[in-house]
Length: 563
Image 1 (cartoon, rainbow, N blue to C red):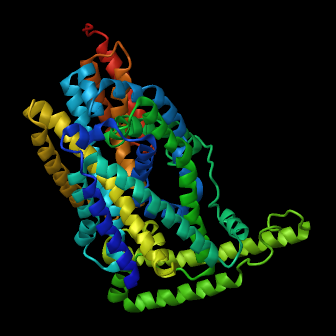
Image 2: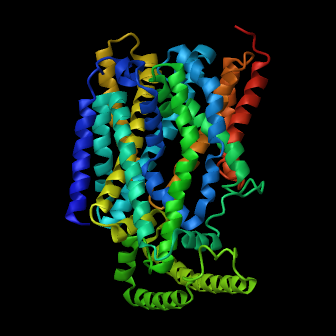
Image 3: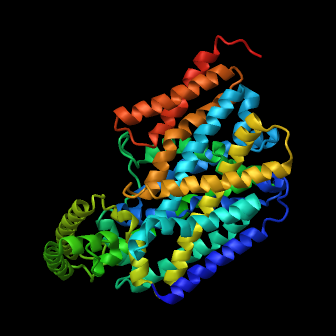
């Protein structure tokens, strides 16, 4: 990478750490450190929530998902607006009125200490591992592209975030997120401009090619529980997932607990309801446009440069022969490329029917020849897997390869800085919530009650560092897990539904503590059984967990006398 790009990345890392430390003023007591004295404005909270979601996984994995699978992943978010409205009239005023530091602190008042501790423990396990995946997303890619040791890549991303989170608390996390959100949007806009400028056809032509390959298909109305992304999985199961993530996950709850009022907390959540789906669709569309770009430019045989180097070193002759066949297939594909007659008339409007038929025939021939190109790439992927022993998950390498190979000097550095910024915004939020839950729900509750704020602040900073170390250890083990955007959501789905079920029980007057605890254990067992014994898509695990917790919880609460 050009030295100017490295200069941009280095300057940003220094700036963000210094600014985060500067934000540590006013965090000498635990309410200031954990909740910013409940004084944050709605727009800062909302941008922080969105920055937490726009992690490096989004920048790398979601755009790669768009390039390989098209727009249908956006169905995953169809339940988000409904979830935000429900939370605005239920969980938000409930937890704000309770005056708690964590969502799980409320559960002790409702169900007792065992339910609180078990729920908080499940959050710590799920969020700690997810934090590792969030660090690993860019670290794995940087390691492969630049040839760095994976541990160094993890450290470059994780250490700065741990530093300013330890020192500045929620104040540093929130206001740093606001700046990082601006950088992320700027980087995405730059990528869109570069792709559109480099495409040799108009945007309309590009969309027609994308549509012919099925990448513009958004809706799938089939009710198939084994299909990951359908309209119904997004609307039904997605609503359960979003209710749990935004309503019971401490990394999100802590945001609106830090807002100035209930109304400002609601408004901050509605920012995601209004903007999340359009923004995700735009990010996926960037990936689709990069896919189209590589229909006019020769894509690399392997996007993962580490696998490419390994195959060239161990199987040089075989790889050279495969590269030759690949180039021949590209020449044949390019000869059939439909570069004329698309766009305004390419959809059959104002065109004679004969011309329309010919146009479809040209497109069909082009797609058939592209299948031959992909068949050669499939052989290369199999060769890479044989040599390295790792599944070559190309979806995570398409966008970085495009950025470093095609974006101008300076803009490539801007994008790499934005990926690191996206990772750090998510990491800092996760670490801050993990530290809060560790100290409030375990250390202060079970070990040192009634100690000074100075003591709890010291423990909180130590907990942040320890969780950061744990996340870094997880990060070095996420290689080969597949599309990282799917990995983090699949991981959360093992826990989110059951945790949501406990909070649903808390709103039912007849539910009792013994029932809630039993239901939570049963819900986790049911999720594990469904995941182990069936092919049900991971989104539906949220529905399974929540329904089993509520059902078992109510059954076992029935004979318990009311307190």
